[in-house]
Image 1 (cartoon, rainbow, N blue to C red):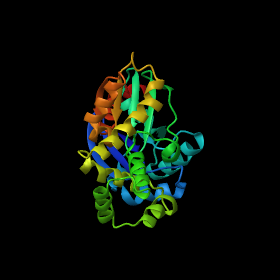
Image 2: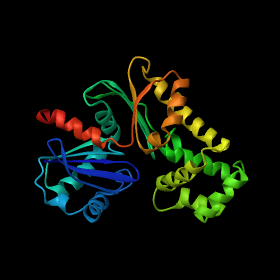
Image 3: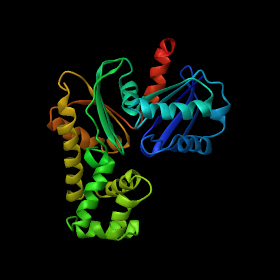
Length: 283
């Protein structure tokens, strides 16, 4: 039996798998070694994950997570996971989870549009090229957090429609100073807050202002990420809640750039289960 876990900014998915059969699944808060200590990661796992995940004899734990790109951050997660599960652990980035889940052993361009955004060219075994995401301040184009950030900027500058601004303040029970506090001075990163603002906007996509915000956000992802790959000769696939929820608009924007998206998935997990079922003898 193996344990597969995949984590973004706001959520971690966990599954226990025997061969290709799903035995148990759960969802907990996101894990990010860039902002969490080893002790905080261990505490999050132990307090939030059902006890059945600690009682099974595991052949190996495969974890894919945000922030797991450097040896330092991988080691931090490795120590936490090894202590909790008492089993061999392999740590990889969440963009590799997207590549494994979307393409298995085939070649293509894998993209994440969720709270964060990311992309890579995958040759069926490894990531050959990846455009740096650069985070919600310097990058993350196309993500739900970026859409929320752009809207909040317009709210504070008086550029958003009056009715939409009024609805936002009423739903979030906020004033201008509260927005600044939530984005810059909150004890935790603003990703979750920005994502919740994006979710608010999904109820207004028939509004020209919101639709144009969404389209321009997606256009920036193609301009600053996808166009740096050989997208005319390889398939392009997306995973993530934002990609899934905005799939029609995402496909329309892609076509304007001559990009054909042949698959959009909400989560990498089903693909990861299939990937390990196909490659278990090599692991």
